[in-house]
Length: 403
Image 1 (cartoon, rainbow, N blue to C red):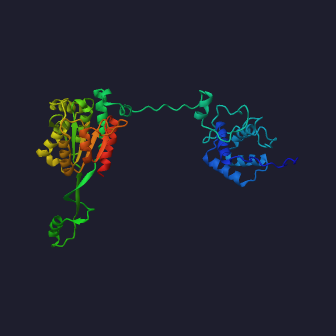
Image 2: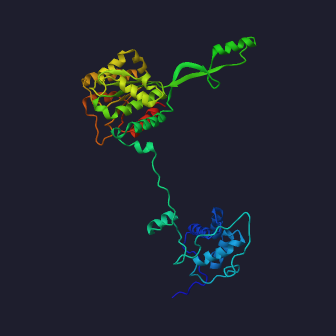
Image 3: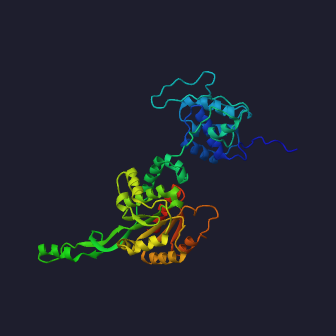
């Protein structure tokens, strides 16, 4: 039988960094200010000093963690409690019997701990959990309790279907939707405006200034292309099959009308322009006037006839180079061939065509309806639009696609 090691190595096989953190945590509970700097000093000391005895560990920890003489008694109590099973340690400066030194300090005031005595069972865990986590299993009611986070009004309503929302909630989410479109992408035009960082020289302003300097172009005026927001044309279906989504889509159209250069239309069996109506400052008044302006609301659906009428009207030029958004479920009483022909003309004239379908987010959805299948080859993207969360995602997708 081998003889016992007369000089055993303390903390053999123990993660010394975890020990330093845990030991400093116990000291802070006793009122000793052991912060990150002291913990780093202790880790470095444990790596530099050979821990061949408990006394070496004691002095390394005391030099690294204790900054004030008044904290020596608390440090000795915690050290004795942690290493209760170790041999008796020489603690020359222990004040446990006589009490801690009564030295007042106006800057550093020791904070008394709630319970600085040793925990029954002794020993220091090498990896400890925060009080909120450690007390969760044993049912300790005195531990730290974090407040329960509750969603905002917009986040709580964003995932609910449109038919479950009242007018106030719909208006609230409509205002949040307008915030999603606050930064609308711009497009480069053929016009140029003066700008100090432009690459092109503006001849007329430069020559006009040269008149004052004997026709010498001392001041060179530069210009750059003018950028304008990308025009949007929005067509929203307000037929009977879209009754649950009609009001929400009116809020979507108002968000476009108030944020960027947009032309918005509602259609059922005919086409109704709502650009001026939805530009009203009051959301409730705008939605009320738009609902009254659509005379064929909650009727049949003629998508092909509506698109053809838009392209024939004087508003057809607004489609040229614009982003066209069609919000409909795809149910159409017109022949699929007529819709395919109208969508082909629309795709050739527009910059991009996006289709918002409230049924596209349903599990297992496939565009097998005749009208939807005929229009899909001419669409840039098909996006779900059953909730305001879907509309927010669609709004961000629109802005990302145009950047």
